[in-house]
Image 1 (tube, rainbow over the protein chains, first blue to last red):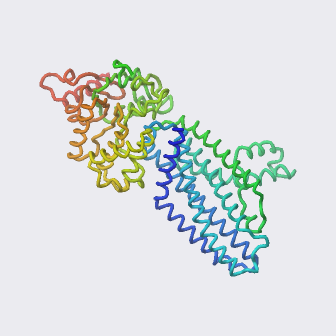
Image 2 (image 1 turned 45 degrees about the vertical axis):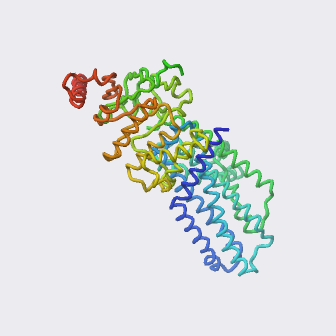
Image 3 (image 1 turned 120 degrees about the vertical axis):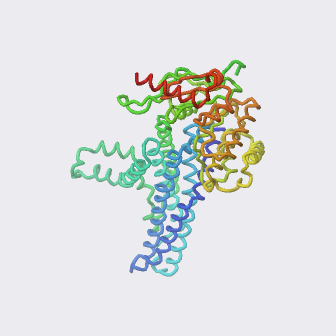
Length: 272
Length: 251
């Protein structure tokens, strides 16, 4: 019970620190401008304006979420080590897993808040476009699907955040951690495509015969493409509650596993 | 803890950094015992191994060999941190939390009841002359204010053992006077204080016993009176012992 309280206090402090950070609001402002740009970008198309609007809106949220993870999130984590702030926390009865989980939860809360703000901003611009160009509203378009797609994006950001925490726990330099996290994100985003190409295509070039390796890698790296529901939202293709629930479970269990490995690696680190 | 249990016990502690071939030995076979209620000054030039010893005591670093015990609990194996207060040489806090929020976080992490924390925070902010800045974000604090907040942070949970790494660093004469007064007060309350410094006047004013360390080797541990020869100042004696150690290592 006390362990969970410590995690909560650390999460709360991290969230407060992040929310009051100027970088968060700079990124959120940028994103709001981006989503508003939706109005201009959409009119450049002469067909499928509704679909473009929804995809553009959700893409801006996803892009901004990544900026938040890689710049604000990793900065807060790196500052703890580089500026020796971690000493203030670990000189208390706080274990490494409580520290990492608290940080992770706090940053997830910031991402959640940012996703809500950006989602609302994107929704406003989408709503405007859909009202203006009613003829191009996708058949079966549903706001519920949009909200679920937005939630999936947050879940995907949570996984990327957990990967960043893992990289941070063993990399000696914050910049290296950032590079590793970005690379893992790119691999995670394309892993499913690569797996399908290799497994389903007998003429997959140099990767022919490497099916087992690719399958093994696809089990190690997160399958981030699963969380990408922008297409479904834009085309009014509903996805089931069961699928959504499975994605939630996947995100939570994968993140928990990464946090467990992060703790093991961080324990080996010397805080000189 | 029985009355005979030392507050801090360091036995045959060694620590090096870097790869095996180019190992930089920071501490060699260090042994120290500090009794409850003592003020122990850990003295040494820059790079002597003072901060490394403190980081080992707090388990931020892991020893290559040797043993550390605080109030009878083995560092790295048993939980002891609710009984220690730590002030680092350059205290760093969350820039966007206020002084009050910073102390609240520390109190909560030390498992203090909420009401008690509020009382302690008010008392400590007053004692450290930070009451006016209680609701200001720490990022805007001066170096001296951060040092005083660090001291309040170390004391918020009323620990038995206090470990200070250069507590007077960056303070103006008024700030140093306040901290010295506070350390004397803490001694009267029966707290054990282990602090590192290279400011010799602080050692003379405050300490019951001292340890002198140079290049990771403990050169002296004991009372201040026994350390000084008749008519010799602490500064002269300190420089002499360091020079003797340098000559011995060259020879």
